[in-house]
Image (cartoon, rainbow, N blue to C red; front, side, top):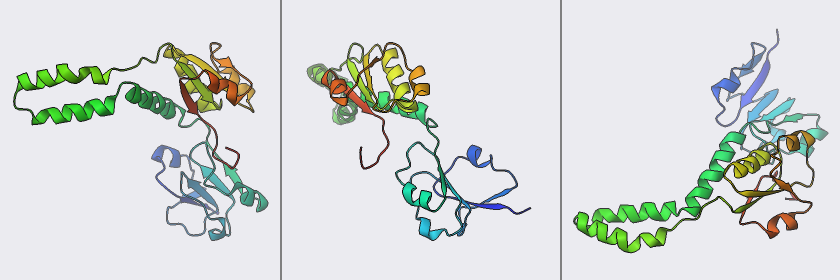
Length: 210
């Protein structure tokens, strides 16, 4: 049985590569593949004359020349939502780090090691702790631009953090909107979404229009 040759670009989880059956030969060093699995590296179609398909391990396809691939009959696949949980966790981790002055606080604590004793440390902490006052997420307004699989999860997580969430997507997909919390306020324009926002989280494909 003829095997399809698959080239792997970037680090792809073994759990994913193990989905290939014996009909496929997977090799990161393959020079003339039938298929490519890629994360973020750019793909030069001219380098692969027998290419039939490209699978992007992620949602965006900005590193793949989709128009050129379409002209050549090369199928391009992506995996929308595959990293949605990770993105949601990182959005709120970074938001918390910013709102709570975590980086400044870490640097301040590191500088305390230069002090001679506990009394000096306590004095400096009492004098300067007011500079690290944080802000709560609860009650704030988050605008989520782009309500795909990731944007919907971010919006829902905002609701779970007791935030008021406003969502906007110029081309909403019904299946995604069905998963959206009813507490998310949908608006008809980006301007309307941004008008009230304390924080903005953008989840859209990277292309010429965005």
